[in-house]
Image 1 (cartoon, helix red, strand yellow):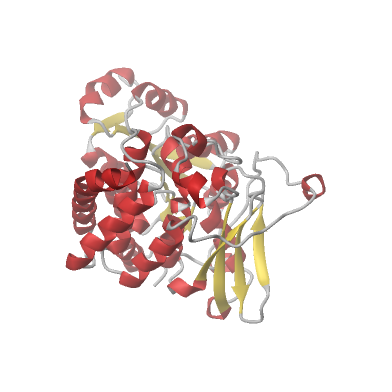
Image 2 (tube, one colour):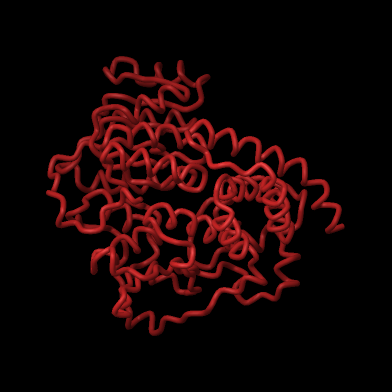
Length: 405
């Protein structure tokens, strides 16, 4: 089952696109806004949301003359209402307002709210049968079956925003879906690509936050260092493209120029390349099936000189082994994988466990959850499993920390 279209020729261009951005002040949202500014004649913005940054949200709402603006933190309602007084812009706050923003009459919705809070709004957009540009991992790693089933049932078009999945989506257009044999997600290898297992085990917070290629938030940077980000991307690809676990490979590519590759039955391999800039995949989704001018740096392969590749090491990076175990187990275990990693990364960043303890805590939580494994049927089921898995991981933290001391 896949709601992701594989051939642009099946769709007619939408010149007058009405856009809503869920998570407008975050990293993906900011890049989306930058692109909207550059193509004001092609897009009208219906609604914008933010988690708590009322000042930035209000400024954007006025700039784009939106019809609705909402903040996730309910206690910020009066602040937002005051900031937009006299503008005619409707305002809201809290979970219900996030869902309302997703239900507003836009035909293209950027689902860029972070964390589990972004799940219900993204599902609300999919229920309307519109185009959902998906940048929220939780929709797929916590509730992949639920989200994709909802999208397919309602005829929603799901466009992947993550650079790797967007690359796969673009490369898949080169052939028929039934001729696809394998997809390959590339990984930079992070800051510990050449480190020994012992060095990785004892890495400091400062070392783990020094990514060689990308400027990202703290959590995703740690995930890159541990390669748990690639584990999460494997789960996303599994649901997005209706693949089997053994059809998804990972290739370490330190230059981060090739973002994804697709192999077809005739052994042709199609790759998508570009400078590391999230505005490229966002621009692709924003204009799809057309193209718009993008501000990312042009790719100069001669200046780069060479591209190199390595096989990933599941011994030094156990996340790759654990994600395969999660997909084989199925049910709720991929949700547990994500939730436990969230707790583990937070514990590492707060000095409660060492870097090596991240994978050990995730594995221990997966093993504990396997006794009561069941597939979430609704968004509330997925959120309940996510919540209980986090509590389970927190309860196992002292044991994991003690083993390392």
